[in-house]
Length: 263
Image (tube, rainbow, N blue to C red; front, side, top):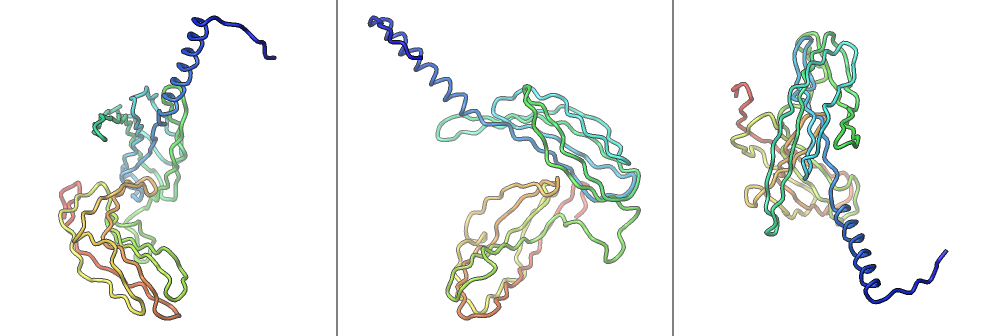
């Protein structure tokens, strides 16, 4: 029901100010981003009795209260911890404005008792009363060193090839990108292309070459493993004839230092 109310000038002004304040509070609240919740593990292939470090991290702009998370029980996996919390802050200046991110982390030790395939379920993480969930993480546990032909985990460093389309018409553009994917646990001191890709049956135009242009790496998580992705070469192909177009391989040489000091 709507009722007409007659207000004097002072009352109308007060009412207008109150409405403006409500709108302002709403806009400020909407601008606060939700925290980023991640569960990472330093290795997802290990032997019986070996240890893996599972880390749960919460990153946000406000440094909210983070409750101690609990890792769900998984048969034949011993979970020890949590250890922490550890906290860190990152400060940035964006367009003259200071911004910060606060990260709170808890670490657990995972020790498998038997060989097999395991999955650490999604973990509930409470941040200032709100509940979030991590992504599940798969583990492969082996009795001893894997035999020849057994399925291997992805190496600490490898070349990733992505293609914008599997099929195209003659003369239609296809974007091909080569990128180096590295485990965040290792340090790479040099990267050298030892085999250039040689394209045939297509006109090629280079879009990006890390040897000539500045390259910026990004991060992603593959089954709980944090990895850096560094673009190396990006080209656009225009097929000059119909039929099957072979995308050539690229080979790299890299100097890698592991956390234990081995090279």
